[in-house]
Image (tube, rainbow, N blue to C red; front, side, top):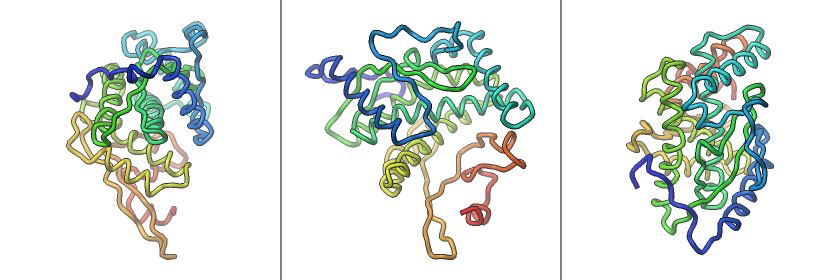
Length: 274
């Protein structure tokens, strides 16, 4: 499948209502497992969240400069409230894009990792709440395929199709070019699968799954998951990887601390924190 092409819907034998119910069950389990995911699930009868209440869809953010400005302003306020100072504009944009991309990757890859279903998450069906950063999702159809390779290709295609319009909108505010932007999506896809595996108590399996999805050479996703192990003095092995690009957490975090997978963080520092 060519990356970026639309996903097919669930098999015809699976009605829309059954598909939606299956995805809702996946997402309810995902919410139970992943406490950092602040998500509101919308049923078929609920109206779309409103911009008047601070909600903006991914499609709206990608297409409307006013929507993009609103979510950036909300992110700047949240960062300033949490850390006591307003970040530079490109830092705000990078942190917001990272938040959105990691969340969207978890919402696409979560059902795949839990139940071998790849949901078709259109940017028009995922909303971001500008004041809080919370999300709202209207589940639609999904894809299931008999072959693992084919299903992984569908997963990558779903991630690429969802993020392409958003990356074009964020290129200017983040001051990043295509490779760096797709590198962030690659990092966030690997990180989302890894995080879910830790929440399941099956980290080794999730690392293997992330490496199978991201072996490298799957453009526009420019790199692989590339996990490795570090060994602490007590003999324990710990999975780690180095992000393809910096998420700029150090620019807003406490005492300019880089995250544990940042290219700025040496293995010695990682071992010290572990």
